[in-house]
Amino acid sequence: MAGAADTVGLAGAAALVGLSYDYLQRHWRALEASEGFPSPFLGARKGQRPRWLVSALLAWMEARSAGQITPLRVVAPAQPTRPANDPAAEQPRHSADRVSALLAAAGGQ
Image 1: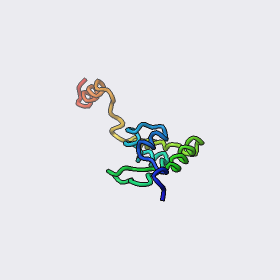
Image 2: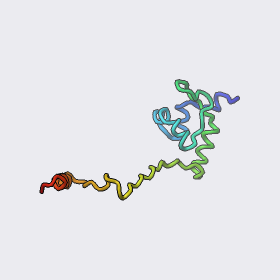
Image 3: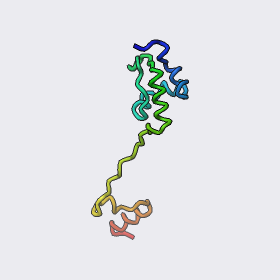
Image 4: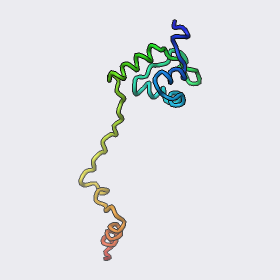
């Protein structure tokens, strides 16, 4: 089991990796999921005080600076294309075009 000198809390982890205490407190779970930030050694549940192994944080920083860890990029899904016979595709975009289209459909000018 690691001793107290081998672990750090939020303040120590933030100082070690160069983040603010507030940012790390709010985002360490997202960093863990997206950038491979190490899981806490103790206190990973909500409401507990997390503690990280210093060696794990140092290894993460080395891997990140070496380019071995790259953040995940969120890509929006492709929008489905509408078929050519879709009535929604035929409707005019501008309100003036809609008025004239409605008048023409009603037999007016």
